[in-house]
Length: 265
Ligand code: 5RP
Image (cartoon, rainbow, N blue to C red; front, top):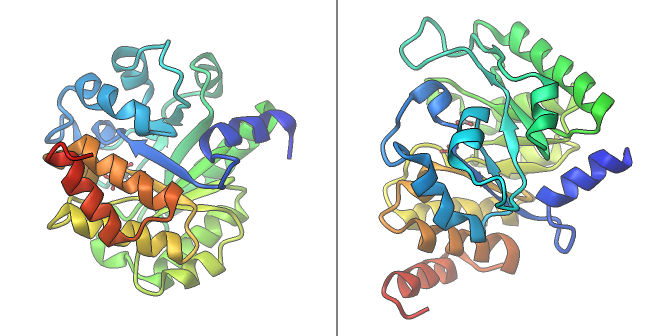
């Protein structure tokens, strides 16, 4: 791997343990001011000390993140859709490689919509991004987006989408946790991080999927809603961090969350 590309990747995936806690804050690109992320700066700043990398759009980078905050940016570069638009899968590249370089992005993220109406376009978008990333030494994260069809989140579908992403040259892939997740990991020759998805019933459920995903071979998380839609976002991310970097179980993470919440830790 090219030195610069490897160097950028190692800012995100911690060389000490090969794991990462990424904070997803890109939702506004198609969801607008989603609940609890209305004012991104206020959400992001307290979480930065516990975050290995943030995943925002360029608009949020430029307006809501202090350039002196030494946090690696995984820049969301796809969009052009909206939750009320014709079809969520109709995404293009919204941020060019020069802008990614100007922002000093440590990686670029783009959604692929396997099996959706605009599958072909999004896969070619990703292949193009990888060519650009290779040229300038910037790693590319493929996000296996499911649009509104949450039913697609099974090992067969996600295994297919993750493998296609890897075949197109993804340096790492963001996907969903599912039953038989080890099959998804097994068929994907590049590192996987999991999204949290829509807010789960309790934060303890998010700890459970994070711990299960790590146990089954994910290298980390790229979580958004289950962190910052929690009543206690700092406690939530610290608990997830304990799972990802310290091997805590879901129960241990739950206890840590309770202790932080009540001021005991
Ligand atoms: C959509 C996305 C989201 O914008 C986001 O990054 C997902 O994070 P989470 O599900 O943990 O809120 O990737 O496909």
